[in-house]
Length: 127
Image: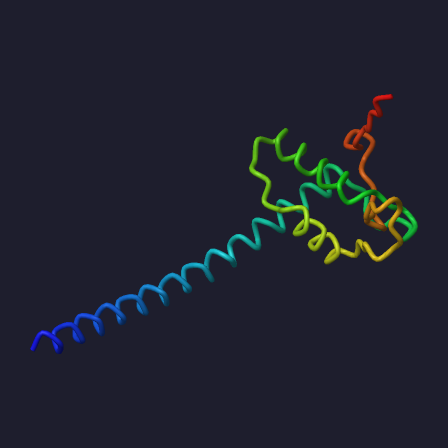
């Protein structure tokens, strides 16, 4: 008798978990659709404010500099950054920017983009 009771409890628990899993997946799908639109608007604003696109393919900027400019831009606007370094690069590639060119001193570059003068990263070398 105890065995059947335990099996029944396990079956009900499993059904509850499955229902919860399905509900969570549906909620995540809805959230992802909303977030996609928000991310696109966020990226468009960053590009509009800080970058120039549609340049010659030889125009390049280090990927790290673009990400640092993005973080600074988000901090200035007091909004949380929505992209990791890798995700920002991937999204920029969707807009025609490439990173297939050669590296220099093991630094990766994005081609077809540059930062506006106000958002360029200044590097200071300490002797």
